[in-house]
Length: 328
Image (spheres, rainbow, N blue to C red):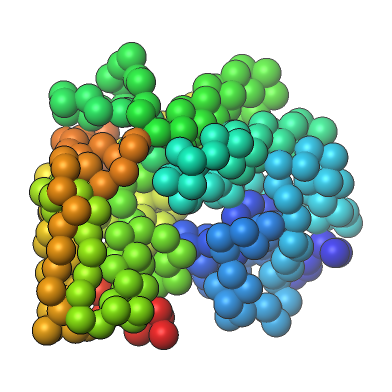
């Protein structure tokens, strides 16, 4: 892999073949910047980067981001010949299959935490000092209070959430040691084009296999906040442009309290298979580590100056036909 040329700013993106990265990379390239992406393709797909494959300002390398030496060498190669570039690392690589991490904790250790540790090490070795990190609301665990960025202590109930929280701690330490600035984004449930996981993605796959029925884990009353991926990326870019502390942590999400899993299931069935019967497996959560309900505060982000245009229900309704179409 060689460095890319012809742009004023360079972005190194881990998890580049994933869901959020698909939208982010498109925005960065449209702004005239250069992007080098890395992904092991365990969850991401080459289809998600096909749009950019021939762009002169984009390069991609299949790589295990948890491999410290390999990632450090890859960062060095991307930077070669570009000593004057201002470079930002976007660390999006992680295990997005929470249930798989419950069944085998090694998955989240390797793909969620060690990818962060490796990214920080590769940055240190190459003198890269600016990091944007995709975290999650799962770090909060089952807290019933309004989930603000300054609330604590935090006790996640999934390995995924635990490894994301550990990653946040490692980033905080790195800011003290060698990073100039870091942004931590705590995501809600994200929906939209190029999805590789999530309830809508799962529902579409199930209805493709069994058009007459849809099994839903839990009782359907789990309530979550949902945001379109385009708006998520808008918020990430806005935060990077306007939050100038050395360590910046923001919840990103809609202004409302979210919608139920039952709402998601009914919207997908209404659009894709109106005669399908929905069957709920019962219980107040879908799997071990599932937080059935939480109240997510985005006041800090609103004070910074950003608010979404679409609420949870609107985001789900907009995403359903897109996810269904892409599930073919």
